[in-house]
Image 1 (spheres, rainbow, N blue to C red):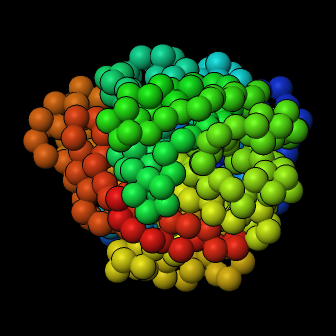
Image 2: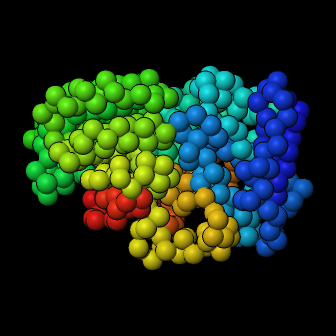
Length: 392
């Protein structure tokens, strides 16, 4: 592990092992500034939270939004007195690259006592590797929507799952638009494969049909062969299980082929950054299901929007579901630690025998088993923004 440690306000960034020093202030400085802390917070003893987020690769498009929302959550917790009377400090770790390498770096920090908990937005194969490397020694709150089925002790899930996200969205599109035949297009790794399996478990009950499944390597930018298959398909809709920049390339190719005029697209991982990158001309009839959107007009969501704008200003990264999920994960971590009165995983797990919940941007949420129960909404792309059409 490189000894290089650069600090920006409440956040420290660990460089890649053996890498040349990087001036992370290029992207950190506009976001990370010191703010006065309120409450009885000890700044000599800290709670160091490993924040695993991708800063490059297909999912790097979400990185700055995830960083900003995490900083806001950490600052708000510190203004309320911190955790266990200690200041929360974030230790971001780049979640892009090999899952094993990411997990090894996080486990090294944990073993050296340099982090007390882990959270963030990262891919499911990274989550799986992290859970295996951490051995339940630290509380780990995974903020990301995912394929479902995670039950590793000490891992808590703040994101949406297909049964509460994709299933009701497909049912709604069947009722409102008559979309019953679906093609699945996804990246070839754990989340898309697992989500596709989950879809097969409920399409029969909804009288829906999967006409074909197409998986491409993560990081794909050429979708010509996929487009050719979809041209010949009888599908009325495409379930997109593509990450970040991959989905952007697909959207552009899909629209250029004119397929957006005969098929809808549904994604459980589509945010405003991806709409902007796709371009307004490539987002016709794109639907997304999520627990949060930047345009969600509930009082709780609007309150977060105001706090975010005041904190980061007009040039802030886009406030979106991926970034907000990091805010949500840190708030869930805080709720768990406060209820247990401890950072010890055994105490935290034992404390969940009693109800755990809080009120935040997604309204009142609560833990059921290891999963956060929350409202999910369906939104339709309007150019480069989302119009929330219904609660699912």
